[in-house]
Image (cartoon, rainbow, N blue to C red; front, side, top):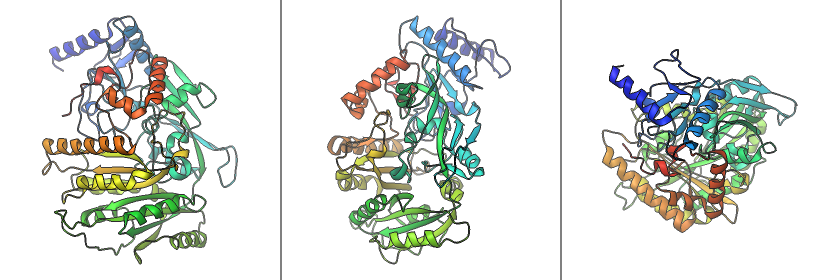
Length: 531
C-alpha cells in the first residue's frame, strides 16, 4: 500500500476507537494488539442484492468467538466513555454475503467475516428410531448449510428445516428466519434450534437456550443481527431419507392452485415439502425446470406480452420422503393417494425420484444456469412478503403489474406457511392471520445489466416499495429480508408491542448500538445510499 493510504487507514481507526485495545493490521501476521483488523476487501461492501454498497474502514476475520468478544467489548467500552450510542464504529457480521440491501455492511465501521470462524460440524446421536432419537449437530455460526448437510448425511441424519439455497451460513439464516417447503411441517429454521453460542454487543460470550438465558436466545433468533453474533448453534436432527419422490403439477386457476396447496399442508403425516410458483412465460417455465430431472410436457399459450391478453399459469411442487433403499412402493402409493385429491390440469402432473442430497441442493443447478448466462453476479431487486391468507388473491393482482412484463427474468415463489409453527418469543415478525395460514411471496428477479441499468433497477425497487407499502397497509402483510427506509417504517413493521420489546432487547444486549448498522433500524445508518 502507498504510505498515505496506510496513514489514512490508521488515522481512521484511531479516530473511531481512540484508546481501545483494537489495532489495525496490514497482514494476518502483523498483529499489534489483542484484536486484529484487516484492510477492507471489496466483498465487504458488496452483497448478493448488489443495490447497496457501504464501505467499512476495516475487516475482521476471527479465528474464535473470543476475538469477536474482544472487539465488541472494546468498541462498547469506547462508546460508553464517549458521546454515547452511534458515535463510534459499528460492526456488521457477514457470512456468505447473501443480503439483499446492504444489511451485512458497515459504512465506516467494521465487518466481521464469520466464515473465518471454525466451521466444525459435530454430530451427536443419543437415541434410535425413525425420528433420529435425540440426535443433534453442533455447528459453527459461519458454516454453510450445505456443509452441515454433508456431515450429517454421513451419519444418516439431517436437519428438519431448510432454506431453498444451501450456500448460506447458519448464523445468517438464524438471524432472519430460514424458510423453505418444509416450514409448514417443522416451522422455520429459527424454530429448530436447541442452543446457541452468542457474542453480545457488550462483548460477552453467552451460551443460551429456551431454558438458559432465554431472553437472549429468543432475541437473537430472527433478530437481524441486532443483539449478538451467532458463533455456534445446536440443531436437532432427524433420520435422513435416501430418496425423495418429487412432484410438480400445473394449474390455470390461482384459486385452485392455493386451495390445493392448503390441502397439501393439511397432510403433514403424508407430505414432507410444499412450495409453488408462478409460470409467467416460456423462459419462466424453462428456468424453473432446470433442476427438475424429468421431462415436462407442458407448453401452454401465454397470450401476448402487452398485458391485454396475458395468461399466467401456476405450479405446485410437493415431495414425499422415501425411506426404502430398494422398493419405492410405499412412497409411490402416498404420491398417488395425494395426487388423486388435487385438481390440477390433467394430465400435467410429473413425478421423479431423486436422491435426498440432490433434492435439497436443487437450487445449485439453477445457480449454475444463471452463472452460465451472466445473470448471477448482477443486481437482484428481490421482494419477499408474508401475506395473510385473506389477502392472497388481492396481493397477487397487486403484484402482477411488476412481474408480467416480457423482460421479467426470475422466479416468483408462492406457498403457504402455518403461523402456529412460528414461535412468538423470537424477534421474527409474521402477520396476524386469524385462520393460521399465511403465504410467502418471493419475487426472485435477476437483472441483465445490458438491458437494465441503474435507473432501471431503481425503478424496480421503487415499484416493489409501492407494492410492499400497499400490501402492509391494506392487507396486513409483513416484509421478510427487507431493509426498511426509516425507523418509523420499522416501528410499523414490528407493531407497537413487538417494537417496544425489540428496543428493550437492544438496550439490554447492545446498549451502545454497536451491532447491525446495515439494517438501518437505529439512527446511524438512516442515510445508507444505493450504488
